[in-house]
Length: 178
Image 1 (cartoon, one colour):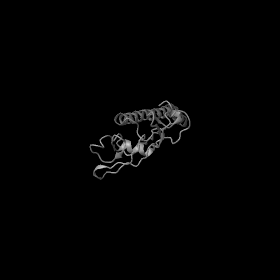
Image 2 (tube, rainbow, N blue to C red):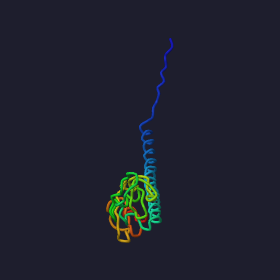
Image 3 (cartoon, rainbow, N blue to C red):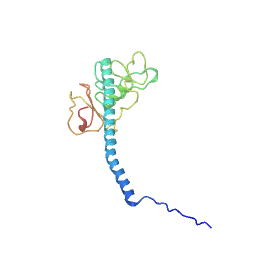
Image 4 (cartoon, rainbow, N blue to C red):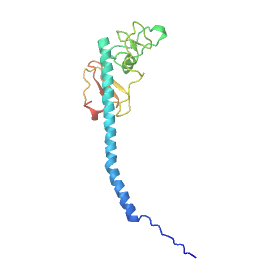
């Protein structure tokens, strides 16, 4: 009768496993901060893109109306085809939103419908302002001071707009160079 020989299989030792775990931890410590910095870079890039788009829309509004959004009231229009008129008074956030997201006439009054009089805009495709990519907030502060300034604490952590100069900036003191 043949003897069955059992071969003893050996596994990894505890020391070998510890070395592998330590090497993986070192690699993770090197790679993870690089991902975090690329996330910040992506947010800054999105901020630059959003600012460029908003500033372009604001400049187009200025070219067509001779003044910046919210420098005139968006109210008082008789809209064609049963459209809804804007509700924003002069120098208000609502006036800025109405004038950027609806059709406007040369005086800046806004409507949800278009005709030969309400032929300008809309300058933004959504009915809301875009979110600030850094803070994920879309609040807006409208100023009539003629200069927003780039310093100081954030008011709403969204956007700041001056309807005298047309300056549109992120409302975040940490990123005052954008």
